[in-house]
Image 1: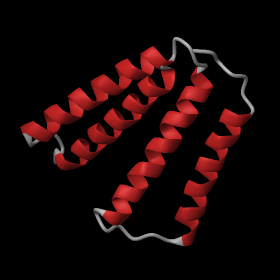
Image 2: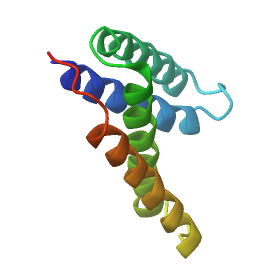
Image 3: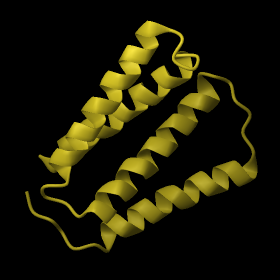
Length: 109
């Protein structure tokens, strides 16, 4: 169940971050509201996840997947330029998350 909560936290954080970009420094009310709700849900779901998983593992997965998914959205949707050092950095982040998950003791639930 904790991975479901973590997935919801990641999804909500991504929605909140995309809305933050669209809010134009909080001058557009609807994206600003979506951002606030998205981050609120993200942190609530994250708090549920932290009941059964260590904060280091949760944060590594949450931030690593969030960065990776947002990078892909940025590249393919917003047409941001991509270069080899950027891809290498994202690959290292994902690799680090995988290593943390593989070599951290299992947390039940």
